[in-house]
Image (cartoon, rainbow, N blue to C red; front, top):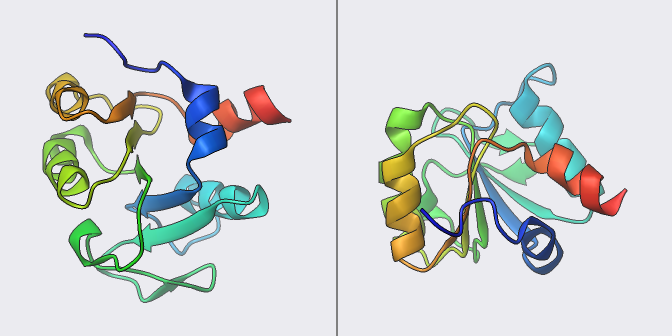
Length: 135
């Protein structure tokens, strides 16, 4: 499989609208901390979680398909078995990047995303990668 985890600095430099799928509103959860970090680094976060209304002052959407603003990066905090469906939705909304957080590995979903022309980052933390290249 090619194009997995390639171009991370370019992705982080060029794409600033990040849908955070599976975000929590609990400050001790990593998804919340990473969303907060991304906001402070100048990204626009788009929380996606059907059980929440607001996260970090931003409207929370029940699903990717209901997001009303352009999504560039789909940052996934869900178990690997849910990723194929999220890739399908990301393709439908014309996202540019599938980013599976550390521990989220789904090769079939990654291959599907690459074949549809998306950049794919798998099993990497977006905060760690941003800090590595830009701080």
